[in-house]
Length: 251
Length: 251
Image 1 (tube, rainbow over the protein chains, first blue to last red):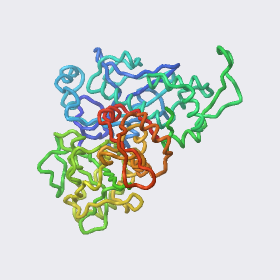
Image 2: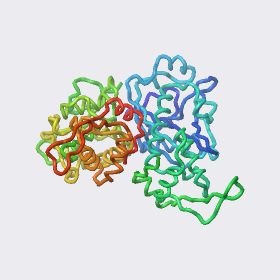
Image 3: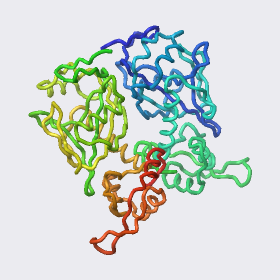
Image 4: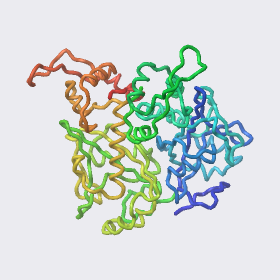
C-alpha cells in the first residue's frame, strides 16, 4: 500500500489512503442559534473546515469520529456522512499552492483528491474548540457571517446545510441539543434555527406528538410569560427506532 | 500518480484512482413493478452489482454515468450518489479470492477498497442490458427474488433502496418512468411500487397537486373501468426546481 507523499505532515507513521480525504462540517446549536466551526491557518487570515486523512486500518466513520474528537473534545455525537466530493477541478490548485506553501508541501496536497463529507450537530456550549497543527484558531461562526473559505469548503458547507435540512424532514433531531426537559416552543425554535425559516406551530406539534419521539410530562415550565407550557422529554427507544428507519416526515 | 495494479483488467491505459471503486444500483420501473439490474460472472452462478473504477481525469459523477451507459445503453437518466462504503472489512477477501481467482487477479482487487455508491432509476423497458468483460449475463431481478450477491453488494443494494425511499419524501420522481400523460392512480402506483407499501390516495393527490409538479390536462383517460380519470403531465420547469431544492414532502 502506498504511503502518501506527506511533505511535512505528521501522520504518526500511519499509512493513509492516497488521494482521499475527509472534511467535517461541525454545526453547533445553542440557545436558538446555529453556527459552524472553522479553523484559521497559522499567521494568516485563511479559514477552512476541519478535515484529515483516512488511515488504512480504520473505518471511514471512525476516521470522521477521530477528527471530530480532535477538534471538539466530544465523543458520541450525531455524525452523518452526507456526500463525496469528486469533481476533477474541485479548486484552483495553483492559487492554493501560492497561498499555503508557507506551511505545507504543495506536492503532498494538491494532486487531485476526492473528499468524503461528514456533518455533525453538537451543543456548542459543550465543545472545546482545538486547532490542528496547521492552524492557530478554531472558532464558531454564525452561518450568515462565514468568511471566504479555502479549497471548495464553502460548497461543502452549503451542501452539508442542505443535507441537514432535508434530513430534518425524516429523521429526529434534538437529543443532546435540547435540555432533558423542554417545551414544544423550544423544540420548534430549534427546528427553525436549523431550517432558517419559520414553521407552522400547530402542524409541527401535531406531527411531533404523532411520531411518538417525545413524551409529555406531568409538569409545566414555570417563570415564563403567559400561561405555563407543558414540558416534554425524548422517548429514547422510539427516537432511536425512528433515527434508524427514517420516515418521520415532520415538516 | 500510481497506476492501479490491474492484474488482467483492461482500463484502456487510463490511470484510475487507487483503492477506490464505484458501484451502481440500477433500479428499473415498468408497469407497476420495481426491479434491479444484476450481473452474472462468467461460467459461474455468482451475481453482483455493476461497477468500475474512477479515472484520474474524470469527475466521479461522469464515471457513474459512463458505467451506467455501458451497462444499460441509456443516457440522461436519474442518477444519485447515495453513500460511500468504507468499512475496513467490507467483505471476506479470502472467500472472494477463492471464488473469483479463476477470472481476475486477486492481488489487484482485494486490497482494502472504498466504494462510492450511486443509484439510478430507469424505465426498464428502455434498457438493453449489457454484461461487462467478467460477466456473461446482465438481467433484471425482482427485488423479492434477488440471489446472494458477491462482495458487500447486498448491503449496498439495501442502503440504495432505503435512500431512494427516503428521497421520495422530498424529491419528485416519475419523469421518464411514467408515460407523457398519466392518471393520478398510475402515479400513485409508481410510488407504491418504489416504497413497497400502500399509501393514502387522498393525501397523495392533495400533496402532488399542491407541489405544482404536475398539470391537470383537459382530457380524461378512456377505456378504463368505472368513470374516466383525468390525465396529468409533468410541469418540467417546476419539476426541475423542486428536484434542485428538495422540499417536496409528499408522503
